[in-house]
View (tube, one colour):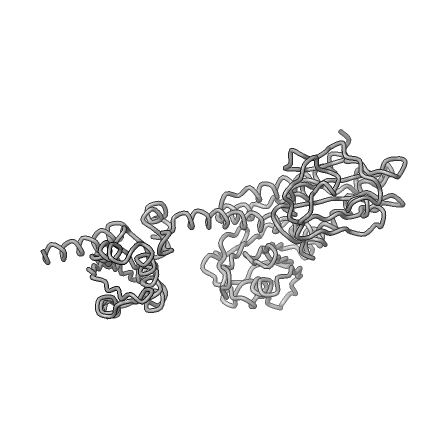
Length: 472
């Protein structure tokens, strides 16, 4: 395989990664200039026809070659055989064919996907830039330019794949701080996460800075990182001597950086975070580096989307089907993460458990549908009556747990009494039927009575048992 074909192969794979493609393929013109044939491809399909021959002017690929204009099919609802590249129909969501013009010749870059119904304008621009790089490699080279001018793509393709295969959010941050110096010659790298619809971000990983950044709060719209997050656009800045440039926050300590680039990590309209790279050299980050980093953050965003989708699937799998709150299995599997979330230094957490002692009777008298509807109303009541921060779990068929943070013991006591009165003395109406609960309540507190999640849950539940025995 010639060096040109190797680089074209890397480019086609990189296109596939960036576009979440099912297939990315390059078609070049035959000598008779009447047909296009497959030259390079990256595909997840077993049905790609590698011997496909597409007539100029026929189908989207042939039209792209004839008109030298992109052919875009969004919300794909046709038989994919019209593309001329598949032996069987594939369930595609969108397709684009881009002309690759070099000299007086034309080839076609074809990309389809099962991941999205549209190709956003920003992604189309990135793919058009890929088409230009492909055109450069298809153009005949002189001996003087054939080696020295070739972009080095194998390393960035390998690194983007390394990013895209990150198993979780934490790994994405770790791998972003490991961008090879040979790829981007910047010693300083910082990754800031912005949770959805939140005005503050936190620096989740960094390297090459003189000071610790882990405690810095980043505010949307403030500093370079906050402005990048708000505007969702990359920025390359060379700082001026004697003029302070705020990177993250006004409270930060100054760093010896003379050139900084910031890029949003986003997929479609979803912002995940911001990548910052910096150098002590005035020309330490170039516009070419910015183009490479655009590919890097695109791969990172895809990895984050996959990680979030996996987390959501796991979370939904462990929700109680009736009430919609996490069940006991969720507590068992994620107790360490939950403990990190709720157990903070100098803070209090109250474990309030309640047991509906007559729940089985309510189901027996009113039926399953009304019993389920009653529990859903109870959860809606909790959502309305108990302000955040809180977590609600279903421990068993009749027992529930409410975690209450940032409250005083007096406030928790008043809340407990109010909930008990509402449930026992104000019946809920389900389809015209009045349903009244009989309840028992237990309470334990962190850190006064323990610092381990399940010991505090069991302590609260044991106090229910004690009341039950006393009543007997």
